[in-house]
Image (cartoon, rainbow, N blue to C red; front, side, top):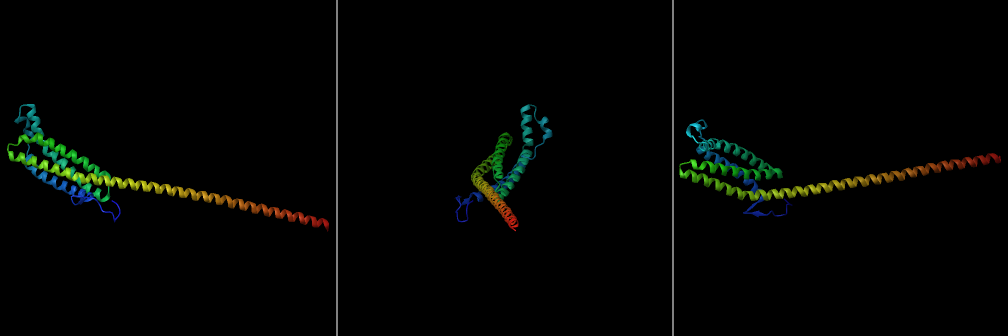
Amino acid sequence: MGGLGVKQQQWCGMTAKMGTVLAGVFTIMAVHMYLIFEHSHLGHGNCSEIALKYESASGIINDFIICWSFKIVLFLSFITILISCFLLYSVYAQIFRGLVIYVAWIFFYETVNVVIQILTNDDFSVTEVRIMRWFGLVSRTIMHCFWMFFVITYAHITYKNQSQGNIVSYKRRISTAEALHSRNKRLSVLGGLSGSYLESQRFGRQRETSTWLVAGGALVKQV
């Protein structure tokens, strides 16, 4: 996110990190309220009466969707809460993958909710209930789009920081390898020079010994 002295860019008085945290909190609260509302209207389906209530195939399919709609919503909402919690942890640990998973799942989640809304909304006879369901869905979708801007922005920042960190780490490994190579090269050169020096000293001693032997032999002959 930059150094301590760098001022972070803000939108609507919030940084990308703060907006991402609030996005996760909003999703958890919105999904919980959505489940409470939908349980009052979708959670009372009787699947055993499908064949008795309708004779046409389209009516049976429609009633079957209504019957299982709350179970589908309940399952998807549970997964959404888990992914939102993982989003909060991803902000703390700067996990880029967690941010991307949240963005992709929210689009999938809201798409499924729109489909269920379209298939089940006509079965509610009370007009106020239908209006409230559409109002809640549209409001939540708009708010998710608003918070998604912060999540995508923070994901971009996280990816950028991780890429720069990987480049720095790669350059550091290269420089370390080059330093070790040059050190080994210097040691091998010094080892070669010391070996040559020792060989020259040994050769000089041998030469000096042979000279003394020759001189000693000449003195013996003179005597």
